[in-house]
Length: 169
Image (cartoon, rainbow, N blue to C red; front, side):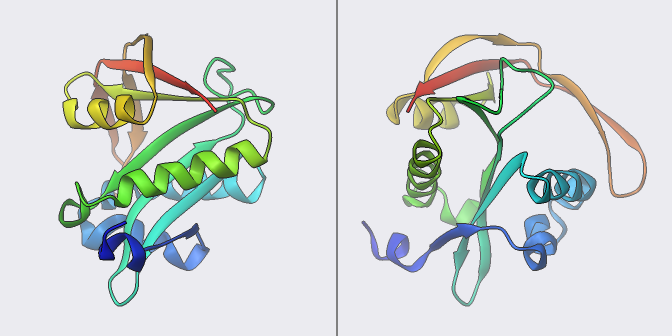
């Protein structure tokens, strides 16, 4: 591990971390999504992790849905769904994301999950390479059309054709 990887603390998200997920306003438009997934976390339907750099704060985040209304993504039993995986630009390609994913996978294995699923934009070639390097395989396509209410109360529509990827844990 690099010295940076040793400095970062991978841990479960705390409520006090929620404002830091917005990365100084860059991700403020996801504020309502962060609040909703935190409620899922409190109900035991999701697990949220952060990479915390002492003296800096949250530099990466990953959300895992344990149960979903789409059982092909997460069924609450053996399949979990990884989403909301982000690493701040200054910490990308420095091992933080890899270490974070490995710790998340270890935690899911300990909970007896057997499969992890994710959707990744077809245009995000760096992320696809990372996932493939870590053992994920493309298993299908996802239309990637969804919407959310931003921090200003406006509906935002997303059209991001994606690949479905899976990994056996």
